[in-house]
Length: 264
Image (cartoon, rainbow, N blue to C red; front, top):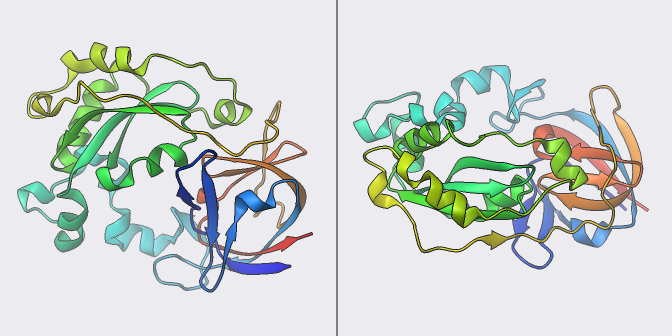
């Protein structure tokens, strides 16, 4: 069977294990059902997620012009401390920025390759943790806007990482840690304005990923260099497909690539 469409990050459903869905314009695939099957991925063309034109993808699924012009690719996306909608100040599109920034946000600790701090909209819990391949996570604060979440993350980065080693996450060389203890340890470092929103009674959330075989050492599939690849799917973690030959393919990292996927 052959499916075609532009890649967007896989949609997920919390479960044991987590369910993954690759959604195209007119079809979708339950990726869990493809474990142990041979897949062929063929790059066909680019398709910008914003303008829809066939232009080379620059970042985040956008062509270069859309990346620098679209409201959904502003610097505050990656650096929430730069959010200004709470001040009524526009970056690229104030109405869009109000819609996204002026809603409850969570600052959390997650353990994917190590303990890290991160920010997400409340509506994206636990999706954000799943996308990062975290096997455990816990909320620290729930604040009313993105700016407060951003300055909290900046303050906590002085004490805990904000990065994930994707290679370590995919090889599953990880250790369980006491995230409650980490949360309580970091409470005193939460900045003024956000400290009143501390969450001190919640428990850890655990994620179970559909992986039959973890690679010993990963090699990343780059469609620009290898436009056609065939391998047996052995697992899904984060937004990565894991294949029998230790090749891994980052779906989110290839958003905006129009591909064909053959199943045999």
